[in-house]
Image (cartoon, rainbow, N blue to C red; front, side):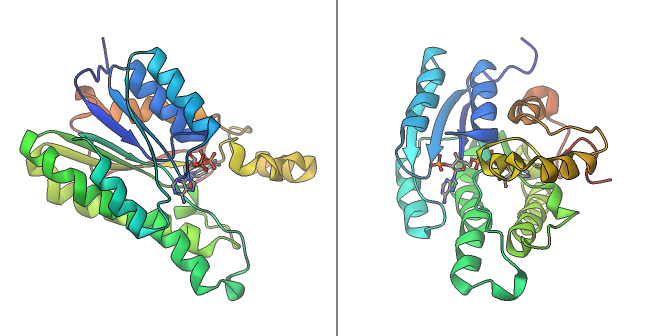
Length: 247
Ligand code: NAP
């Protein structure tokens, strides 16, 4: 099989729904054992786990709120050895920049940056021992085109992409690649309420050169490629999957 991931174990954070769920399913279809993660136990997380279990590829189901460092610490204790780490969960708070509180700053930075760093620190040791590993952070088109009311969110994605670039050089000697994949406008639970307003939806579609939103599955193929042997020579890259929105 091309892009085969048999024999590997993948954690995809925020894989109960949205983009993370499509990535988790794709990695399981490619043969990886997958850990489904959500912020809290839920029926959607259980449904996702059942889909992966039906493929015979469910390694575990884990709930942890990544905006709380103490939950990241206890999550690490429950993790098996992982050689594919996809850091997809994020928090996005929409607010004019002058009104952002310290708590809102901390919540977003904890989930979108600190948790990624802590999970990489935890998982990289095993990858280094194996001399093989794949780390993919999920960024955003907002690294290049920040929404004015999402200052902390867009900055957190820049910080995470910077971390991926730094670690790509530091881990390359161990056969570990580190890349950031940056979605554009992808239709998920996160934005479906905003897109219920047809006028707003029309203006957003107009800002996308391809003229339509992406689907959650649009990210899955590139992540599978990056995690496979065929992707072994790609590292330190920031890959935009955005219908041209970053242009
Ligand atoms: P989504 O549909 O809102 O799903 C978010 C996922 O993250 C869920 O599995 C959720 O778990 C988990 N999550 C949320 N808060 C968490 C927390 N505090 N701790 C742990 N897990 C948490 O999101 P999405 O649209 O698929 O976005 C996925 C990634 O793509 C994010 O990094 C986002 O920034 C990025 N992105 C998305 C778009 C877009 O247009 N959708 C654009 C650019 C970038 P629960 O089910 O427990 O809530």
